[in-house]
Amino acid sequence: MKVAFISGTSMMNSALFTDWGQGAAVETTWGRVSYRKRGGHVIINRHGEGAQKPPHAINHRANIRALADLGFTDVVSVNSVGSLRLNLPPGTLVSCADYVCLQDGPATFFDDELRGGSPGIANNLIPMLTEKLAPEFVVHTGKIYVQMRGPRFETRAEVRILREWGDVVGMTAAHEADLCAETGLRYNSLAIVDNYANGLEGAAGIDFERFKELVRENQARVDRLFTRLLEILG
Image 1: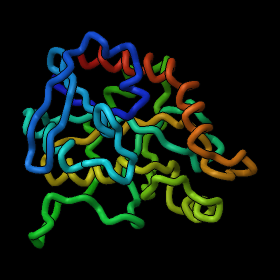
Image 2: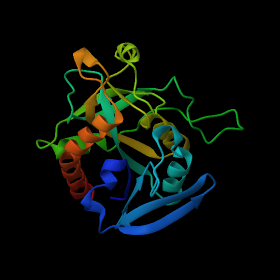
Image 3: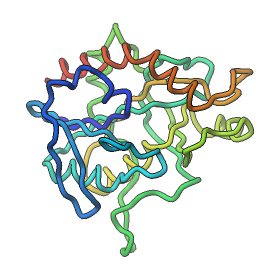
Image 4: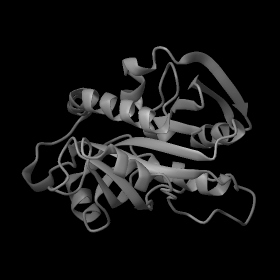
């Protein structure tokens, strides 16, 4: 099955991709995008290769346009998220079916036109992936993703509000889903909970050093997840 993957830094830190072709790139109207390829799959690091961009500076339009130009129709995105629910602890795997993105205007391909895609997450592959990943991985489906701008984490007061809106919080997936809808790509959401949101029920505060530590702790689980995804979709 021909599938494109969008990943974050933890994926690109994985040894799983050392034998994937490196150095390939595609030029788009929105900029140059590097990718790695093996067989019918490509993977891009949403933050870019080399000097990686923080979440609020990611060139989402170039990333999604590149996947469309490479001929893909199905996209599996793996995102790092913070949990807004005590029953979704770090290490949990979720799939989001909808999202809220109010703080930062959505990225769009239609800056100069009065039009836009019908927003949403296709998740056309998620039922099959959920079935085949079990019992090793339990995917908590149908969750709501709340996108905040970043690069800072949310305040405790913001988290109290966000808990009324969704289940997990992140800084990237809503823009990706919007652009995939505009381009006709089918976006599939998988997300690893790396931390509890700031101050959740007395949880310790979060900063980037602690966040990086939590991501490292989840690396083996992420590697295993991606191994299984490649087996299933190979």
